Length: 162
Image (cartoon, rainbow, N blue to C red):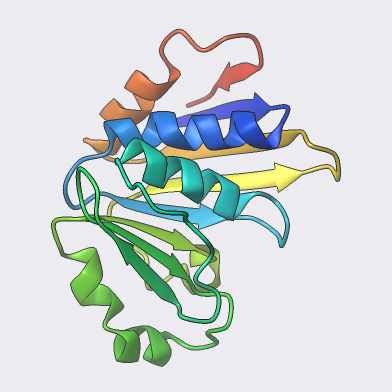
């Protein structure tokens, strides 16, 4: 199941992330992809807000992981600086992903083979303006249920796919 949503501002992108965060469940994994400046961290900030995180959410580019408390634990990863799957194992990523929290992984596409587990895959693209094209892909339940709930009643600009 695929679904595309377009946002026209940073706030709209963050609000979409928040709507997703409110619907995520223990153990959920969100694989977030997009070029530098596409809005991945803005989206992640919204997901954290939707999970009830009450502290500022920043990209963990240099720390690789920021763990936050909320309705569910929120583990925010940024893999931009990593170059091999071996580094993912050294980080203990597999243990975090198997936990009861929600894990959001920026730059997950760099390690597509590693992330073969069920997950909600999100691609964010920008045309250089404030507009964003956000494509969601869910191959398994319960991610498809989350996506159906997220996209029910979306306004113009939402384009369902399969």
